[in-house]
Image (cartoon, rainbow, N blue to C red; front, side):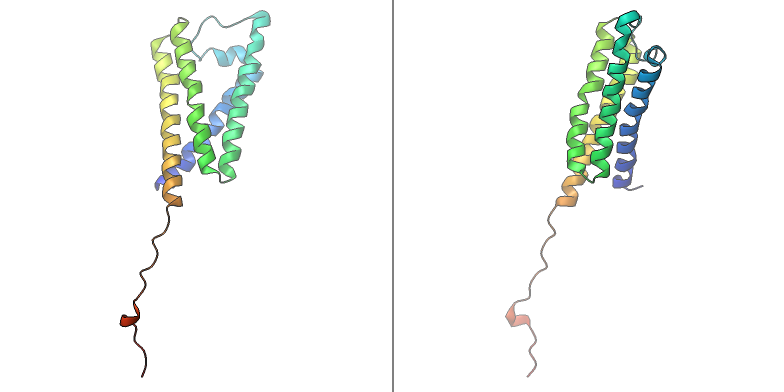
Length: 148
């Protein structure tokens, strides 16, 4: 599999995953929250944060997908690099609020690493595709054959 194809699959997956998580938070916040890594989750009025998180995740996925489908690989790489902050902060939040280290590192830390790798690969591919093509060597007039 080529690097371009691998990066395409990875980027689309990384755009679709937060969209699916976001929809879970919007429609079943308590159910989706159980795998985040912090217990107990908000109840009552505080449970209003579930749709907030859900919309954030859906919007992130849509932004990444639209940029990528529009062929804006560099912009996608920049957005992906910035988006790496989300799982990093999620990991820190889990670690500082009594969550398990395994969940913090295994879910959020690993996600941050994969997103960062994808951003790097997108930058790398964009740079190699934008590299100027070396001009063809020109023949000197002395080497040209002129008919007599």
